[in-house]
Length: 96
Image 1 (cartoon, rainbow, N blue to C red):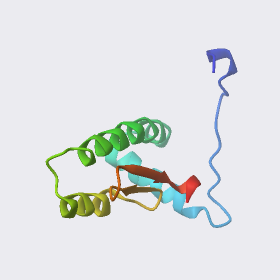
Image 2 (image 1 turned 180 degrees about the vertical axis):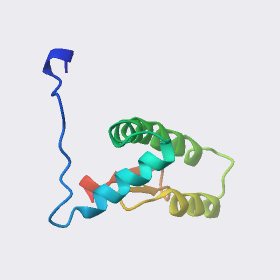
Image 3 (image 1 turned 60 degrees about the vertical axis):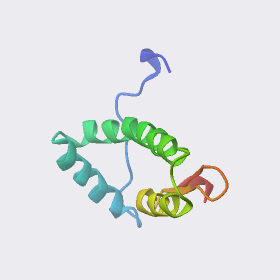
Image 4 (image 1 turned 90 degrees about the vertical axis):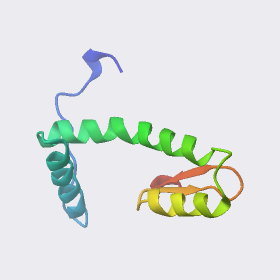
């Protein structure tokens, strides 16, 4: 998207069962020690890097099956699920 196509603002719905989103944004702002807008952008940028790093760790040859299982359980969240049973797979909330 070119700079001229970038909207001036983006709205995130936090009503009708989406109240958890505001809490998540507030937590991110505290974590990153910044305003909510920057926190959302930082978190969005970080998620790709974190998933790629987790995938690299799970693909290591020196891990046992039990270690891989423990790592997948530790790193999986409500929106991202790791599976290392037969190779490494990442499933996101949209795919679940």
